[in-house]
Image (cartoon, rainbow over the protein chains, first blue to last red):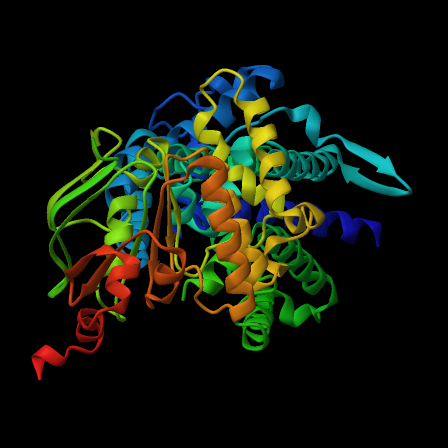
Length: 301
Length: 244
């Protein structure tokens, strides 16, 4: 029972962090950033030295964790900000559909860049192997990583909440997310806020990359895309642009996946995702605006 | 030298010309009403000065700088504070957070925090109701309270000019009286320069000051509100008798 709870929480953590990264950017510029998943993939591959060999040449991955974590977070934030400056800045006045297509294109550019450097073969890597040790809590044996994932996600969520509520930059970001042009008329710098959102979102992508990389031990260019799809669905269910909603929906999706894995009859389990998506459709039929509707989008129709 | 000067401003929305070759200027300390029927181009003009609506041609100067085509945040930094139509309260933020959003633009100056704090007290002194609801969600305030909030928010940036787009839109008449009462008091207190857009010229005539009357994207009258208000010209401008 406890095992199920922890499985649900740790899977939900990944979805929640992913959804948050998408919601942050959507909030300030109405961009659904489909390149987010490829930023995740980039961050994982940043651990390796570029080579097309089947053997992974570990580069940054050998760093001790207190250097590794900041390095990967910086990679994510840096790439994300770079995407904003090079690509999305040009599309700021474009309509959301155009921006979305641009993000698709950008995602493919990043993916094929990785493909060129690393080839398409998945690589195995053993990152911080000590985290795979099981620990025993209340009679349940859990991988230490699962615990760390959950704790780290909580820390990130609390940190982000404090940042958004208590700092001046957070205040400006919240104001801009709700009404960008009014915030600008009050002197809030558009570039600063948008770059901040991209940096945060990139760092969140990096956090996912780290957890995912340690968990699976294999690096795959497609790995960002799978998580990205669930994260994107979570942002929609949560109410596009609503940060709280994105997190809530991320955890709900994680819970739904894990519970269905356990509860469904054995024969139906391979089709688990179909059931999860079915539940998603049901939720959207009853609450098309999402679980928690974001104020900015509601009023700006 | 005038605080604001517009010369030959034309504003287009794709094929539609909202404002055609409008020029006027405004001095520090002045109160100017821009009135006219719906669609006259009043709001477009205001939004163009604020930098949120691009101009097709012409030039805008504010506080000694050319601001044509400048970003809204830079224009705000020069001291142009805008209260847009429909108020645009940040509904998910608290009342106090709403007031504080604009103070960050002075964050490079020395002692901006204490100045923001004393400004906040001054705004609370003018609008005690805002202080009562300071930690409440701003979206839950009534229309009149929201109007007070956005005026307070505009003052928090210590502006040289406050522009208000239709402050009386959607408010009950007695609330309107209150809003204008405060505006007049504030103007006397701080020597505020006020640029107010209203559909009806009633407020301009009551408050006094200068009035510009627009119609079809052009200025048709410009003069003292009380003198203009009594003439037949104003009727002609609103109802367009000369056209038919």
